[in-house]
Amino acid sequence: MLKHFLLLCLLTAVVQAQDLGPAKDDPSVPKDRDTILRIQIFLDKNLFGPGKLDGAVGEFTYKAVVNYNYAHGHKDLYNWARIQAAAMDEVPVIFAAFKITPILTRYVTADLPEDYEKASAYPFMAYRSMQELIAERFHTDETFLAAINPGKNMAALKPGDIIVVPNVKSFRIEDIKPMQSFKTDALLSSHTIVVDTTERMAAIYSDKEMMLAAFPITPGKPQFIPVGTWKVVTMMATPTFRYDKQFLEEGVRGEEAFQIPPGPNSPIGVIWCGLSKSGIGLHGTAMPRTIGRTRSAGCVRFANWDAIRLPQLIRPGTRVIVR
Image 1 (cartoon, rainbow, N blue to C red):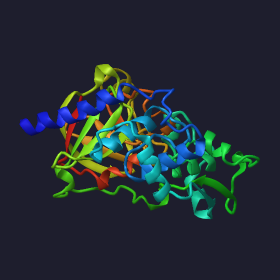
Image 2 (image 1 turned 90 degrees about the vertical axis):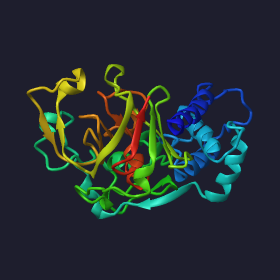
Image 3 (image 1 turned 135 degrees about the vertical axis):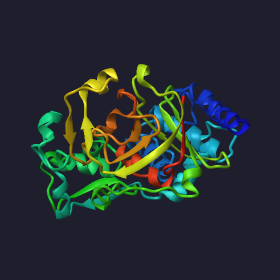
Image 4 (image 1 turned 135 degrees about the horizontal axis):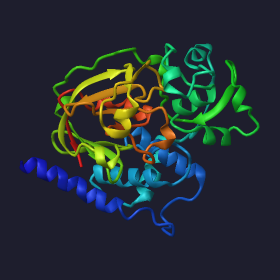
């Protein structure tokens, strides 16, 4: 009981700091795009998700700085200079050249319907464009990808084209094993994930109550948020998904539903972590740019590039605190 209480107190201290938000007049906060992008890549690399990589100091980049400093035992949670210096060492080059390979065309279906009923007839919820695939692959969005590739026709990308991307470890859709199930693990199952629905962050702690990682999330609608303590029961990559509009909107299982095939544009993205609370899970998303800004029914959504890292941090048996 005391251990649980201490854990909540630790997170509360961070949340209170985060609530202050970034000070626009704070001279320690970098202003130029490339410096900010370097810091974002560094934070992403170290499992403190800044949201999409875009070279701008938004809510989640600021929170990632605070969480990184807190996790590393620094009392001055708002110290950007320390992280900027570390980023210069770890991320000397912020952009990379990426050549589109033919295999990636397998994961693009230009005519995939937005309507889930129609999409359910397709075998795979693929990307709708090569630009969308590459943006997610390098943890950014189509807008920023176009901005760092001026003059490039992003709507006509094809195998052999070379484009500029953020120099981050890529999210490789082709490496995900279909329907892969993740089992309990003596170490990872002992971890705890705290989902703060107000701050829209999920923080992962070791059994020693050390913060290991923190990612932006989209929580469920207020009336459906499953506040309480649960456990991860199942974990599976690229599962199919029962799309029940009535359940998503009202929290009541409907009679009409569609079985959505797996894929990055599935409503649950590339991974599902089912909780001991029936019907609720931690999962990916088809719309990474909306993380933190729209609400699902009762589940917790991560960007796919963050969701795919969950099996390296938590496993079935992991305690999940939703607050």
